[in-house]
Image (cartoon, rainbow, N blue to C red; front, side, top):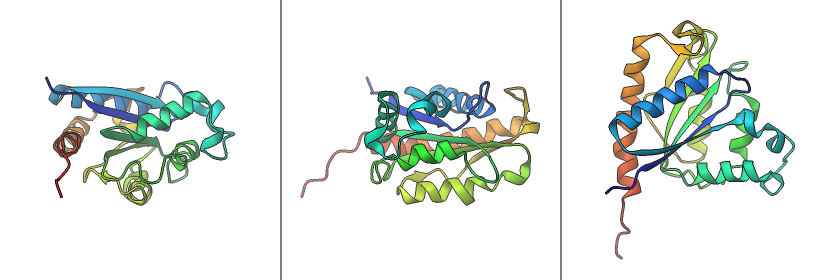
Length: 187
């Protein structure tokens, strides 16, 4: 029996219910339809009390420390944030400021964002992709952006979204599978 891929999603929304969380749930569901996954969703809104006042990793609470460790040891990361003033939320960025600089090297990452209009779609390539390039993560070529018109509340209506999610999942799963099952090369 194969070990499930460890998928950790970080949702940068600071409210509930969240369109961003609905998007992440759909990405995880799509992955689960194709591959055996062990998924965990970390919502920044739950970490705010122990995260907001921490100036460095030594000062986070136990819940935030556990969330950071989960991201750093994931086979796949889903990084999802609502757009706030043209970028990801500040608490989302603060969380990733505390992730070890080299922990995500070569980790497959799916980038996702939600925003009020299509004008914010560039957040994927102008904000999220550079953040994960710093970590030397492997970001899926296809990012997933949804605007308010793609939803009814937190229900996703746009059928094109499902195609984009499917493409991103099909890009990431083979890479994650290879990396998770790799064996060291003998010298």
